[in-house]
Image 1 (cartoon, rainbow, N blue to C red):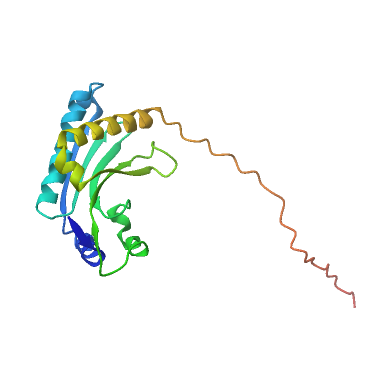
Image 2 (spheres, rainbow, N blue to C red):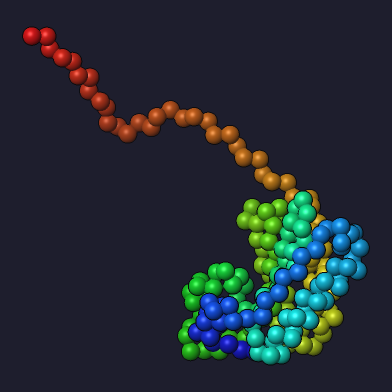
Length: 180
């Protein structure tokens, strides 16, 4: 699937894309890869179905709990989330068609300083050729991000010391009243 910058931004702006969100608890996935693989396979299948119908998609999985994490697959021409679609014009020219790729997004306040990560997961050709391989790749990536979220230590915020007033070079003159 190829899409022009104009069509892409119009579809995102109008939310004219396939969207799905599933929420599960950490307890539902456990430590086993099987449930995570099942969920990853579902995300890949939905994304592939959207591509077959020449549609953009944003399919997401939220894993709720003490350290909530949201995974999403988005079809886009660049590794920017749909929420930043206005910035896409900075990187592409009008009037040209661009190939769509599948990007894997991870969002959690326990991921990194920005709370967000996006990576290209596959091209349209790769997902068409071997959906099972892409689902396995996604499962491994999700498992790695979950581990990262569980082990994340927020940086300690240094205590700001009160500093002396800045010297601007200007001094105030003392004023005295004269007695009459």
